[in-house]
Length: 326
Image (cartoon, rainbow, N blue to C red; front, side, top):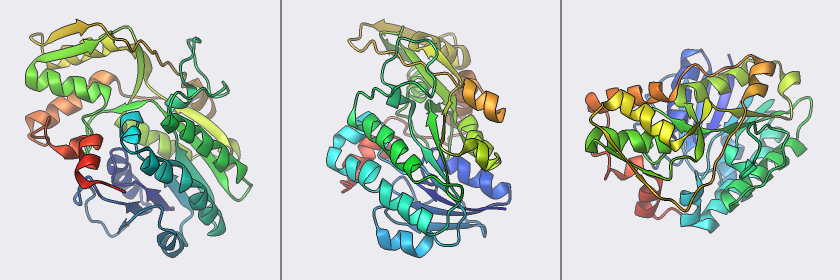
């Protein structure tokens, strides 16, 4: 049993990760602004929720002691959300990071797991983009993710194990749902409008099912610390074109769904290899993009997700605009 502190634990991935960790017997503390809903996490005697900001040093000093593991999920997520307020994005994604790492180490956290992004690679010509390739980030969001990886590893020691995960784009259903990610966007439009608009289509987009994303963190928790210290792991299902993603969605939602292709100026392709985490930890994804679409379809049918185009809680930018986060 571990005592795990999770920043951003009420976010999209956190809302799936936290219940699973509790079911596995761990004690979990979540620090989150809770801007996407107060009811994202069910109450549990093994769960403590702190509504607060990772930039608040007093909160870190008060609540971090007594934990042995920290999973850092909190951030202004993805380029559009970051560009909405670059000053805010920098303060949360970069400026708050080193104080969090320092405080964690000072309070005898033994394992710090950081959620980076596969966007740190930028655009590569190689078909298999591996963790040892140079980073060529295209945006400040990606650049700061890469800088945080270096900061984290500079604090690594035998007693302070540091590990970074570079996820592909997450897809599928969660209690804190996002409908502003590519597979989830396509599924929402296919189910409710019976139509998908694809801009370009040949661009490659690596995705990962949210359940596999959760399991990758658990694989790190169970791994030999000596093997994963100062290591970085890509986590993804496979690299598919946007056209392939659209056809996967249509195959689940129905033959009546129209796919409309239009030209796009954005022909960037991203492709990553997840071979390292398979070889080192024996971790493989179990779920496909189609599985994610099936889960979303079921959620729509059960009315677990309603008002799916206008509810600001499903869209990071809409919500951030609404509350004027500072």
